[in-house]
Length: 111
Image (tube, rainbow, N blue to C red; front, side, top):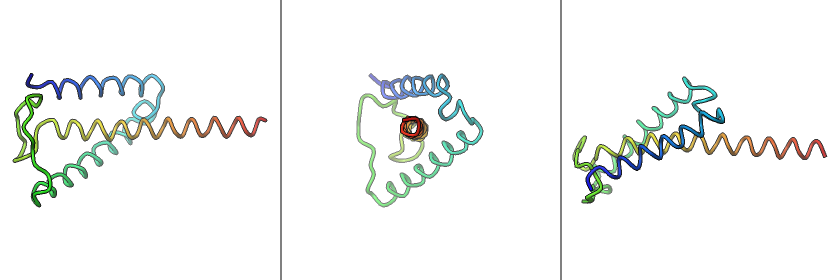
């Protein structure tokens, strides 16, 4: 089913965004800075992908789940969506880890 991977990425990204906004983790806490970080991370990883494609390390596999739209040779449309999702997810997980560590620290200090 063409496009299923893009749909799965979009649904996953919306789920992470909902958790993020609900708990004010990344975009919910500082949207401007976090959007810049997501954009910079996505661009960095796209450049990394392009270098890998140019050197022959990365190639696009055939999958019926991809939409079939290539932004460049061996660079499917889904790739930048995945990279942006990965960057956002990393920021959310990092924010959660910081909160957990702060709560543990506060618990030890209270005891």
